[in-house]
Each structure stands twice: as C-alpha cells, then as structure tokens.
Length: 546
Image (cartoon, rainbow, N blue to C red):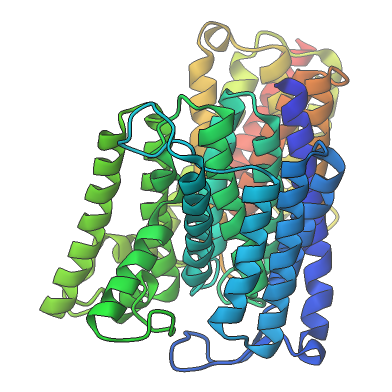
C-alpha cells in the first residue's frame, strides 16, 4: 500500500488546493449569484453569509478522483451522483427549493449508484451470514443512503460542525479500507477530506462561508457510499453494524429530531431548532464549546468502530445505542433541571476546559511555559549528549553564540541581530546532532524521542488553537511548507528521497512553530529559552573545537 498511500496523499493535497483556490473567488461573487444564507429564527448567525463552500468541496474532491480512480460503472455512478447533488444543492442554495425537490436530486444520485453501479447492502446486522433478498437489499440501500444524506445535511448547523464530523468519519473509513487494501475507498475518503480541509480554512468560527446544501449533501452521499462499499465489498468480514459507529452522531441526531417532531405533531421535514447543537446552545454552551462537545462525542463513536471492527453485531449496536442514549438522556435531564453551562457555580468540565484554553486562560499559560521548557531541554540535551560535534558546525555555532550574546546584552539596540533567525538555526543545529550523532540513550530507546515530539506536537497544537486572531493566521507560506513536506514524504515512499530527510524536516517544522509560540509570549529577552539557546551554542562551539 506504499504507492497507494502516496497517491492518496497527492489526491488529498490537490483536493485541498482546489477547494482553497475556488472558495475565495466564489465568496466574492456569492451576492451576485444569490447564494447568501440569510439569518432567520432557526439559525445561529446574525448576518448574511455566502453559502458557496460546497462547490469548492465537491470540485476539490471530484476533479482529482476523476483522474486517479479506475473507470468502471460504480466509480462513474458515484462521480455523476456527486455532480447531480452539487447541481441540486446549488439550485437550492440560490432558490430555496422545497424538500421534495431536493429529494429528487438525492434519489437520482443514489439510484445511479445502487442500480447502475450495482452497489447495495447484501448483509444486515443481526441477520446471520446468509445474504438478504437482492430486491429488498437494493431498496433498503436507497432509503438508507438518502437518510444519511439528510442526516449530514441537517447536522450542518454550526461553523465547522458538519465538516469536522465528516472528517472524523472519513479518516476512520480510510484507515479500515487501507487495512483491507482497497485503494478506491482510500482515495475517495482522502479526496473528500482534502476538499473539506480546504473549506474549513474559511469556515472556522466565525465563518466567512457556509458549505450550503451542495456541500452537506455531497458529504452525506460520500459517507453513505463509502460505508456500504467498505462493509459489502472491501471487507465483508467487517461487522455490518459498523456503519452505525462510523457515521456516528448525525444519524442518531436526525432520528431524535424526527421523533420529537412526530411526537409534537409537527411536519417531519420542517426545519426546527431541536438538533443536538441547538440544544447545547440553549443550555448555555458557547458556539465553539458546542462544536467541541460534538466533535468529542463523534470521535468516541468513530474510535469505537476503529478499535472493534470485527465484534459481534449485537455488541457494536449495543455500544452505539448506549452512547447515544446516554447523550440524549443527559441533554433531557439538563433541560428539565434548568442547568446552564455558564450559570452561577455551574461551570461544567468541558466549558471550563474551553475557557482555560482561551488566549488568556490558565491552561494556555501553562501550555506556553511547557513549550518553552521542552525546547530548552531539547537544546541542552541535544548539544551536551550527542555522540559527536563536527568541526564545521562548531564554527557556525561560535558565530551564532557571539551574535546571540550581543542581541541579549544590548537588547533592541542591536537591531541588526535577528533573534528569530538565530534561534531557528540553533534549533536546526540541535536536530542535526540528534539525527546524525544520536546520544547513546536514544539509540537504545527511541520511545523517549517519539513521546517527546508527540507531547510537543500536542502542546503546539493547543497553542495555535488558543491563540488570538492576529497570531498564527494561516498564510500561503504555511501551506507551501506543508506541500513541501508532503512532496518529500511522497518521494520517500516512492524511494526518491531519504526517509531521514523527511523525518528531519518534520521535527524542524514542529520545533520552529514552538519557537514562534515562545517568541510571541516572551516577556523578557532573558529567559530560560534564550539562555538555553546561548548555552547550547556555546557547548557546540567548545565541543567541536576541542
């Protein structure tokens, strides 16, 4: 699967790039096209927002797939069905079609896959090993796939919600498909993930763009297509109950909503504010807190699928129902008791954690100090314990030592000495020593090294997530770095580049982002990190010369 994963990574990058390139242009022309989502009582945004993101998601995913997927009836049916849903979705985003017209597009797309592509469910949970009747299986598949499309469509109620939930499911599907050596499923899943990642660049709260029906219906269609393909074709040993966990919360949410509408004598298809995200908002959770809660719950369900793909149907369905019942029972109890997330003395664990991760929160401050200490430890460890220090490195370290000493001594009066550049080079020197002249303890126990960088990655991710708006905004340079790393990774998999080079660059990039966090929150030029950098450069100079 090495080459297959190389292709999947390439497809992911291309899909993300196409999505990111198309969406800004569509945002500009959304008012002219009439694709603006206007506020109303059941929505949470207060100003009109362009709903053109779905076009970027679909085109980003479909275009590379059209080039890399094999040409057969099933693939053609999927791609054509995706375009049908895009057309109907865009039409709805412009004209506000009724739900019956949208159903027409959904059924056309699904019928293409089931009857022309010949993809349908042949084994149902709790029904044993014998296949079910083909006619019933096809009808069931059509109804189930349309249901999933609407489940994802209705989950698109908060910034980043439907996209994030879908990415979690798509990642799990890609993982299971890779184990089954099914490159078709891996490519479709990674292409869809790429399109969504490109969209989320503009959809993080507060969103600049919505995916609209064109995007949410495509994601539902793709997820439904993939779970059927995975369990019925790729690996029939997988439990047929697995799709419940892979699709996760959106399916149970829409069933809960329908139940409440029927119980209240309302129209099944009339939009209301009784989805799980609406209920979390009513309980006092902030917008981003509600998304965090739902991401966490979806991750729990999806992780269960990854860890137990071959368990008995009854066990998987029992786990799914137990988690979902617990979720909705907790919501009902909280609503009846009038509990509020931010009421007096009623700060929940999740809301408290989210607040602590705000730019001035307690955990954010601890996180910044942790990064500073970890970088300092890495510098000192790498330069003092490396097996050897080459002479040419010592010369460069000597020059940098003098420059950094002058910069720290004279402060901003030494304007010609760039602190960031010196610290970057010091970090690069340390990584070079660890990789080429590793300390004895790392040669015998690489786990320490992996754990260190794992913790650092998490700490940097938290720092980026909790940063203020003006800090760590994603720029074209960031994506250029990502593309370079992915290109090197592809070359490494194909045997055209040394894996050690890829590993070196990944570590350097993580450490560089750590340096950015430290510099951003540096209160004084004399601190543990700058002093450690100065000391490490001095050590390299002395060891290399002596």
